[in-house]
Image 1 (tube, rainbow, N blue to C red):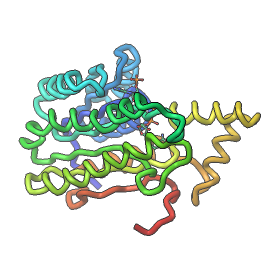
Image 2: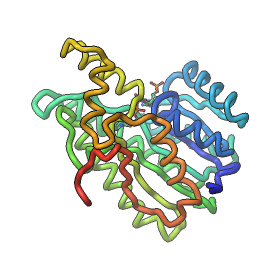
Image 3: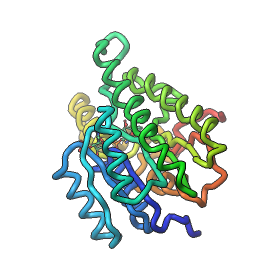
Image 4: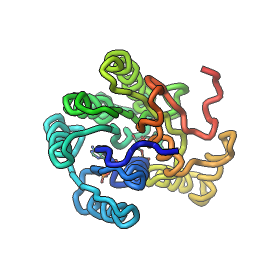
Length: 263
Ligand SMILES: NC(=O)c1ccc[n+]([C@@H]2O[C@H](COP(=O)([O-])OP(=O)(O)OC[C@H]3O[C@@H](n4cnc5c(N)ncnc54)[C@H](OP(=O)(O)O)[C@@H]3O)[C@@H](O)[C@H]2O)c1
């Protein structure tokens, strides 16, 4: 199937590693012009160079913190200027720290809101004028399975992801008639740097290896394993592509069946 992404102009936020990097790579392999982003230019250049080597397509590296409104706006405007427009925006950022309602501070709440909700708001506001000019415009937000089912000890993530889910559905309502599709992926446990760190700290606490901690987490899903970033990226790239032209306002789990509910 031709995904119709050749020469598409794509900005993938928070993509120096993890789910974002895998998604940027897959877009590039499909022939898109991709901008990768992260806070640290050196690290980002390495990611861009690795993708470029593999795909043979140009990849731009624009560093900046997407939680800062002015920085996020400038990033999108620079990306659109360098690419000559924008067709696809993938919003993403790091995840908030773990904790329970009684262990996290008010400052943690504000930071989590800024990290996951406001970063998406900033980027989407800045991108809309360009997306409106595109004939294959699409926005993808990255949330979590926690929008369907809270995860223990992640009160911040469980809460702020719901706001991004609400934003995604509202935007689908508002932007559909302008031909801009908006969807979200709800990742389950996927083997990225962030998850490896979580498994290492679990392993230390439980006196087991990180590999064993990962196996135990994976065993809790119907597929009995964690996901790989490429498995996430394949779905992300399809959802953003013209091949998914009637998929709009969808909240798609990529979770090995972890969400058991039917709705
Ligand atoms: N992996 C999973 O199992 C899973 C499951 C559900 C939800 N999620 C969520 O999906 C998102 C991506 O997860 P991941 O596992 O890929 O995380 P990751 O491995 O920690 O990667 C996060 C990426 O975001 C960048 N980043 C972090 N803060 C940023 C900021 N303020 N501005 C710009 N870039 C920033 C990081 O680069 P720099 O550090 O270089 O800036 C890195 O490239 C997170 O929100 C995570 O909570 C992940």
